[in-house]
Image: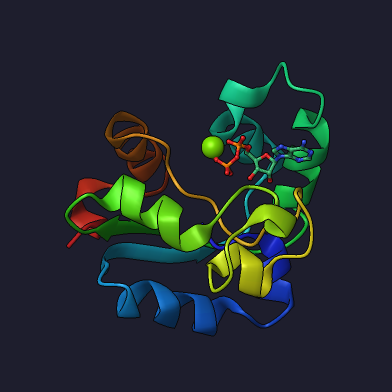
Length: 131
Ligand code: ADP
Ligand code: MG
């Protein structure tokens, strides 16, 4: 996902270009404003963490781009190009280093495993929407 902060700040196009230039193929994409129920369900895994309510509020503060990306070693390579969760700790030239301001408004989401990538992909897309 390209999160609401990056969309609102006008960085979505540059982020998509960064992702494609890094060798990822876009298999599906949509521009969507999540409901509170959808954002809460997407981040259900974090519901015991202290930042959960703020995270859900932030994720519904504006539209996002959701996408399914394909590449060899996609999960690990995507986490490399997005950088650390806290943009202050993200390596130079990573998406979060370039386009994010804070740990909560950190520009992008990336799946943390192949298993979760499949679950998160089917959260947003039907089989007919995936190339
Ligand atoms: P990542 O997005 O790098 O996989 P996590 O899965 O740990 O990071 O957290 C999910 C999201 O929750 C983060 O991207 C960020 O938006 C938010 N978040 C994580 N840790 C914090 C924190 N300490 N304070 C506020 N928001 C946080
Ligand atoms: Mg995560």
